[in-house]
Length: 402
Image (cartoon, rainbow, N blue to C red):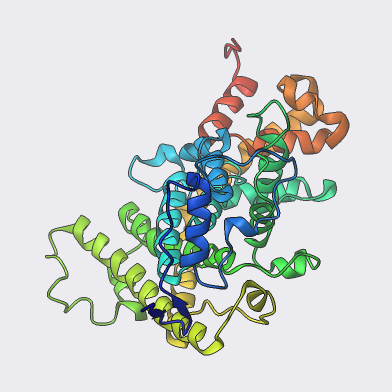
């Protein structure tokens, strides 16, 4: 007798049909498996609208698996290793970079997508690509470029991510960019906060897209605390005063005071684990109450069902305010950021005066994209280290150019 499976989100699914992998290609088997096992409101590879440039389907990977691999193999992804998360790479080997942050977001995203029966491949791909548009020196670098580019269309890192994957990344002979699935391209723009105001004509965000925005927040809220403690900028006693840390000091699992590294890591686990468990419990209850039956039900929702409890929302806001006041605006951090602003300002102005010194591929784009946008693309693609080296090449007397 065939049984049904019920899930904590309230959905009921027939026990999966046993698929014969020998009668299907690997890709077909994986696509059929998605249809059988994912929630009815998840995006499936079979539902994709395809790519801008048609390509034959891959024999062993679904469309979203292929997208994920293209992101990981891209030059822009590799550069994340030397791009700032909070502290520039040269400040220490143990601080998070934009790459380690991205890996942490992808890891958490995959776990939560699996638990919510959303599409892991789609979610992971978006998590891996979500920050490749960041310029050197993190959010400070973005603010600088946004200010410099204000008269020429502005700069925003999610828009730059889309620009990279559709135009700037040069890996294929048939087209510019990575030719990702149309849904991934749309999701990149929707990762922007308040995307509806910026892009009123775009479709409502898939749950997978909404999930990545939340995992991104959870990861940087917890792991920026660890980096702040490790740097000495944050004080442990102040961190323990946060509401989310209630009772932790008296917890017998809290490591002995002399083991500083273990204490920091315990605090971070406490923050992240508390947010994750609250998110899962609250979201699963919300999904169960909504009884979504298909993807169209998601697109018709007025507000997201992926939520935290009111208490956790309050505690998250407290962490974000604490990090902004005590860390992101700390004099030491501001000194690092102001130094990077000086570098970027001077390099931008130099290439405005001497655009013929740009690399050839960026000079070739000037007729189509304009001089300022081509300079912005060049600077945004730099790592922290490369930007500093470029500054030395341009402005330090007697520095060799070859």
